[in-house]
Length: 319
Image (cartoon, rainbow, N blue to C red; front, side, top):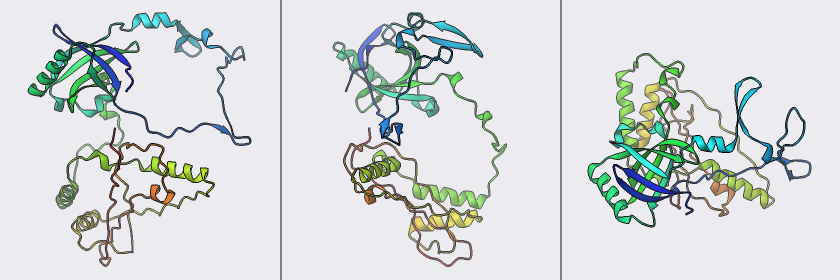
């Protein structure tokens, strides 16, 4: 791993030298803008709208537009002077992990021990583990101050950068939220039973990025000179009887009678987590495979087998 930051965690008068590494990596497949006529990639020029000329980097500064067409300008040195220059992750408080809503989390970093201070590193880990607490800290990375949480994952200190409270939009801004939840008791009972049927331990390795796999297979097929065809999506229909949908879902979990061929409802695959794909070539048919749509009958439809989408287990670990 590449070290992206060196500094120390401090709490009270204790200093713990650490090195920072990115704990995640972007697995999105990068695409470039290409001129279709000749197959050449498109370049972007830094053009001044007023002078109508390309501007070199040394003539570019940052500016804040306080009203249309009017800017206050800042040199790089001015912005650097405003930011924190110390290399310190300063813990302000210790709190329970359950008290923090996941909406606050941004990006995860591993914190390895520095060249010195291994005893202090182990001490902080043991103290966090025994008290079941996490540290809330301030940190400055690339001159930008951020809130952060310090916790433990598999014997390693981890830092999660966090949004500040004023960066979280209030839920009340979401349109059309119901004032009071009113549900049918029987439907609620069926929904709870369905949740119980689908409940289990979190196993991140079984969730894969189906779109990325299909895109990589399509790329491989084009490289090999094959014609790439995409099957049209089946039309989606709405289930009017919610109880029938819940009942059919439960029966499919138990292996009992389920949907007939008369009407189906589209079931989307669960949210996927990134899995290591590498550059291994996959057969297009294999990589394009995804969850089938589960069938749900009308209340008067005859019974027939139905299934639900099952996630493929990724062979490579999730990072």
